[in-house]
Image (cartoon, rainbow, N blue to C red; front, side, top):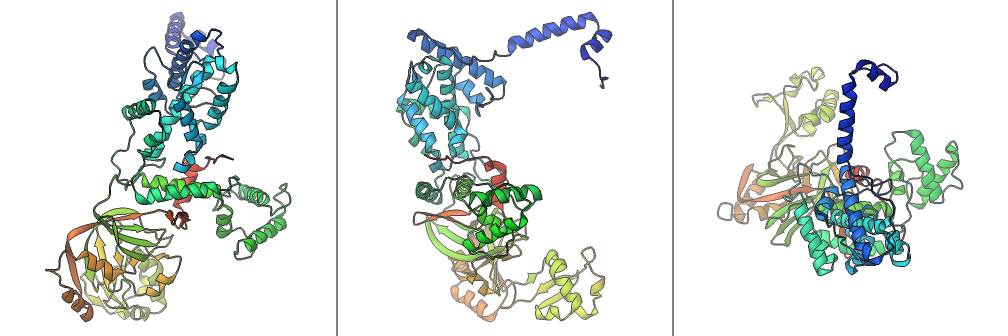
Amino acid sequence: MYLPDLNFSKYMRKRCNPCFFVICLILTAIFACNTPEKPKPVEIVRKPEDLNKKVNKNIASIVAYVAENKGVLNDSITFSQPGFLQKWYAGTESTRTWSIQKQWTPVADSLIEFIKHSEIFGLFPADYHFVLLKGIHHALKTDTTAMKDAVLWARADIMLTDAFMQMAKDIKLGRLQRDSITLRKDTLLNDSLGIALLQSVQQNNTITPVMESLEPFYREYHAIREALKNFLDSMNRTEYTYVSYPIEDSTEFLTQLQARLYEGGYLINNSSIADTAGLAEAVRQFEVEKALKVDGKAGPSVVAELNNTDAERFKRIAINLDRYKLMPDSMPVRYAFVNLPAFRLEVWDNDTLRIESKIIVGNPKTRTPVLTSELTNFVVFPQWTVPMSIIIKEMLPQIQRKVEYLDKQNLMVVDRNDSIIDPHTVKWFRLNKNNFPYQLKQREGDDNSLGVIKFNFRNKYSVYLHDTNARWLFSKKDRALSHGCVRVQEWKKLYQYLVKNDSVRYKPDTLNAWMKRKEKHTVAFSKRTPIFFRYFTCEAKNGKIILYNDIYDEDKLIREKYFKNRKVLSSL
């Protein structure tokens, strides 16, 4: 209801019965009784024997307050697990967990040390109250007045419990949103499990083994974790300005660019973005130093290199560790694994790498999707039916210029009845995306875009694995070149592996004969092989972290959504 712009209380007095105000007073009193009182900021306890009791009372007060206040205690303290805190400190006792009288327990010291070094798990200590806890921990060990403050002990206790539970969740489940390809079944770390973990810590006086028990089992994950130690030891912890790209706000972009160039020593001052000539010269200096094309323009390659700092690299490592937490709890005995940014296909059988192959994946405009499926069959000397998107965007303009383009590409025109049409009888200039009653098919053979073999698996994207008639492209470093399907260099090894259990039905001589005669055949194998298409831009080799190009900007998107404001420690 719209109210006129006047004093609200006068407006209500004119229109409401006096009983209304009585009811309001009663309701206000009821709600006031149910709203927890704001906790004390400080409470100095003079008698040592009263400290435990006072600390427990303050714990109860703080926990009740933050539960009603969405985890917020004040401007500097917000608890991420208010519901768990209620359950852990339930009851009238609200017993302190991490200290006794004026002393920290040994496991509390261990937890604070664990938080400090939690970067080796791909975590950010600041997410777990580390800055405040570090100061409080020091004060409660060295300051005699602070040691008597029941509120300070209570806050520290709750912060440690909150930090423990949040770290346990982040180590077990990660910080990324579940999506359609997440295969992990235990997508929750419930309060019961959290309580059991915390009880185990208290009973065994140890933190690290409990946290390690929550990690993914993957060998690749643990290889990154091990190599991360060396990365952190030599890490430059300087936090540089991040330059956002593509440009959405030109003024903001120039401000970020100038700040970053100034921080790197390429600009003498950081006063005005109006000095475009000075900025261009600074960019040129940076390009020369990084062996980039020297043009003085802050394009995508320059921005990517400016953002390629140790702090940003750590964020990418953390993102990839979290990606493993979206994977299933265990992998099949045998499976094929496609890592898109690494341009690599692997086939694993009983924890043994059977096949490793270079691959070519979709370019950024026609991405290869992430997916999970099963390889069901392969086709020897397949015929390629050109997708309509490729016909309209790429082929139709060429055909309209010169019909002979179809012959050069070994393409035939087929109508809805699958009858071959003479291309010279088609009025190509009348055709468009809304009017194209034909299919273009590429004849079988070595010059077919699919090469001599195509591997099929069910998926909604109409992608598959295949050979290629442009095998020289496997020599390129950046192999994001296809329209979405994945080209496999070691296709012979792959098809031989897939039919190894069907030697009675498909003898090697038979397959070789088909290949030699260039005959089209569909081969279905008895044991389907699970296949995973995934996006991992980080791995470890020989104890060193390797980062692949973020070909589809997935790391960048996740950074902006989940890691934008996260900071590494300035020092350890």
